[in-house]
Length: 320
Image 1 (cartoon, helix red, strand yellow):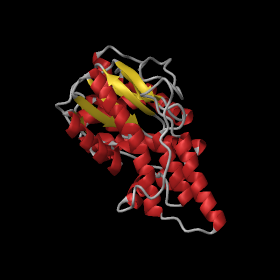
Image 2 (image 1 turned 45 degrees about the vertical axis):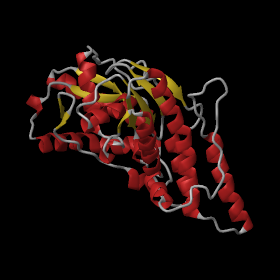
Image 3 (image 1 turned 60 degrees about the horizontal axis):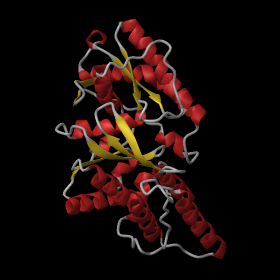
Image 4 (image 1 turned 45 degrees about the horizontal axis):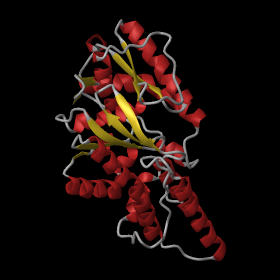
């Protein structure tokens, strides 16, 4: 529950991470079923934590894209029913726009325009946030998302799912020059990225070591991997910031919690003089508060969803 786009009244979360960890990744059908089981009770819990009743709700926000279509459909249909029953507007929100809005909660003084690095398990892109609801993609991954690579590497190392946090912990104290890993460049698109080669290089390294009976320096490997990802993300983000000259750089998404990436961005912004905005760690991952925050600005911009609203597995952040 969010008031006026900046004040979080409650943020109830039902995590499925432990269950999906058994399979080394999200199983879409199971995720959808668990959404059905949890959504009504979670909504009531959020109301209770906020000290509100249904009569206090002015609008209902929902993530409608992008993501796993089954899980999105559960949320969209529940939200449509709730908005219709309460007689209030329904506000569709793009998931990545919500991640960007997490920065407004952590930093109430932040206002567009600014450059935002959006980096998660499903998306990796550099966005020109021109206004709260007007955005332009400056660069993006051509293949895998950075967060997906963290998950895949963590799985092959057997250290847990989701992979971001265990990889970050493993990298602490590791030698980030221990293994030479690739940093890809996209010809003719200096702000675009590619992570498939990096992921493949690490997987081959692990498999070859296993076949030869060699012992890997796991902290060194995790640190080298984090450095390769950061070396791909940070220079491009700073180049975009230099081109636009806003003087403000933000980060959004689950990978924004990564220690190496945060530290490298802090150093880069100190050198450039740009102000860096990082979401608090609890708001880096998926949460309802960020969706409610962005919904406020979508509402002010006149965005509404009707009973015909559908969910989409893919949709550009530029379209909203």
